[in-house]
Picture (tube, rainbow, N blue to C red):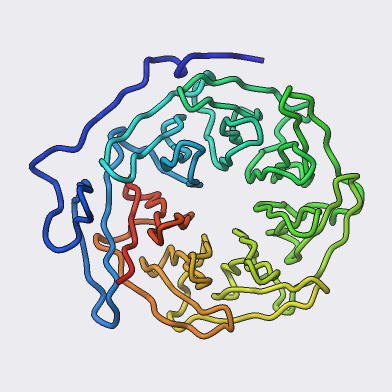
Length: 341
């Protein structure tokens, strides 16, 4: 176990440059946001703004709303955990204790801290809202931890993509790994919770898996072979939605395990992340198409909106309670904001 206060360095806090504040028509009640480029979609009242991360080559990945209301995200290229104040546009960054750790997934934990996966360092990390980081080494070498979620049992559950296992870590740091019942080489990625169990995508096996808190696994094959299921999100209506990168669309699995697939209009869009907005609509990222998409819960495609700047590499996306949406622009080194009309 390794601990560090803010990693190797003290946290760097950068305030918004007053010269780059975005003013024209989108400032809400005292909010000022950093703006590099913005674009208004022609077909709908949707605007997309990019907030640049201070560290070069940050390569942000999973992004979540933290217990303090800020946006917390993994900087997979810089080996840092980032924090963005959505109202002021100020960034704070915390270096992980292990260099080149490649953090990927992050989630608020049951203990008031945030927990994250360090894929290259083969560790699970914990960071307090003040930036104190603790790391826990996994028992399986090269497990490649990726996605992480707070389980119904009060523990943290995570995927081991390289080892094709599902892991569990208690708030005190005790790790258990499960492999029985999983297709060998399935490469699990994203996890969500539904009805007291954990559901996860199997990227290589083209399946959706379900594991109970006692470790019993069930797998559901997808209609489209080699569809590459990745990010998942639980919908308030009881369904689970997931992106299918090679199938070029979204999938939906109900409580009985029935899967329905919905394609998007843009060919080879390379969907990567999906989130549910407060109104129930699904918002998703299109990595190759450089767009953000929107779909109704009945599968009706509402729109696809161009991201300002070429080849931003949109990955994860998250919705806040006030209807704002944020996504990681992995290749552009920025956090994007989607502002629906």
